[in-house]
Length: 464
Ligand code: GLC
Image (cartoon, rainbow, N blue to C red; front, top):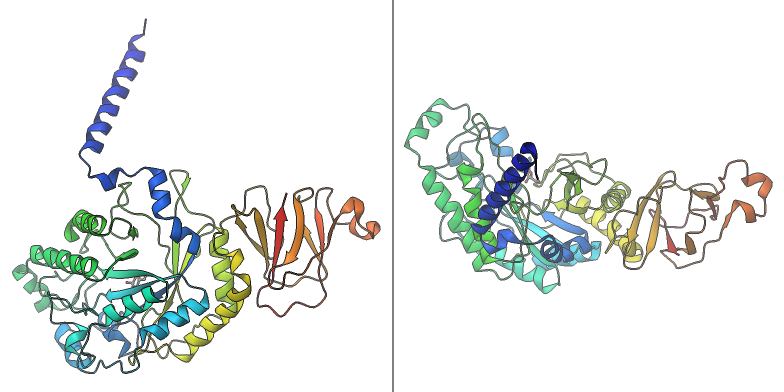
């Protein structure tokens, strides 16, 4: 016999279960994907780890950040008058972009098909504000998609929710005309329904006419006062189009549907390195940090906070060491090429990746019982059971691996496959020296005095 409170709990549980069932029953098939199915859909992306973000649009002409229209409060008409007929990327060769991305070790790319300024790189039927009508005179997105796919890279798109050009887009706190009273007053004449339809038409076009699209980066929702949230964009409607037209597509988390399990695939920390693998309800979630070479996404001639190649390689390693992906941005110039500062960094990363990519592809965070040695990042390949120790700072002859005794079969440098010797305290030849600091279960790795000629050297440990 059940007591009254027990009965109450049981009934509550049953009705909650029923409710859940009813809710899932109404969902389309793609929203009912199992965790295993999702894992399989994201498998290539989690394996590849490293992609190229590309921010390119009219803003590459002023070359003062892709938010220049907003920062300088330029009206849509003035912005168009200034830059639309100047945009003439005579050096644009996406095959070269793809070759550079590939040589850097990147495996996928995400291009801004339309950024907040509202200018489309593709030949859209739904707007005249497009590359086809500039001196460029052609569908620039199509050439990108073909070139990257042709080079064996996965093709992603960035799709702005925001549109500072569209006549029916209500002026809000993020709009260049936010402080303009007349423009504000004209809000009453606008029809966001038309804008919502426009967003869907454009998205459908991009996901129908250009072959397989592997990833989409929606950007971005900002609910609250004088902002726009998921209902303003009809985020659910956009999500549905993306999932139905491109069933394998991987979707970011900026549609403002984060309370729905099916509303996003991965987290997007921007210009920010999480302290550890991000979690959701205690579960580790897929994530990709997007980062810039300098402080701007669009080409910014005078921006000088460029990261060094060493910092960028360390950033890639750190990201993978926390189970994430790195989407590293290039802002091509108005003429359509990557500038020398971007080129030298891509080359530097490529030089490192050529010999060390085994510690990146297919790798993730190390199992919890491997503590990272001082000044090191660890990555781990669960298929090959190899652990990678990245030495950010070259130590003097000795590296201590805390608690690794009995766990390692063999050690070598990754870049040249040369053996690295190690001992445990009990078998160390200079026991009197090492006992001072090495713990009972530590391994003591013997390194050459001179750092090998590798930006960040990697030790590959074959685990037992
Ligand atoms: C932001 C910015 C933007 C950039 C993007 C990249 O939300 O609005 O300019 O495209 O993030 O993550």
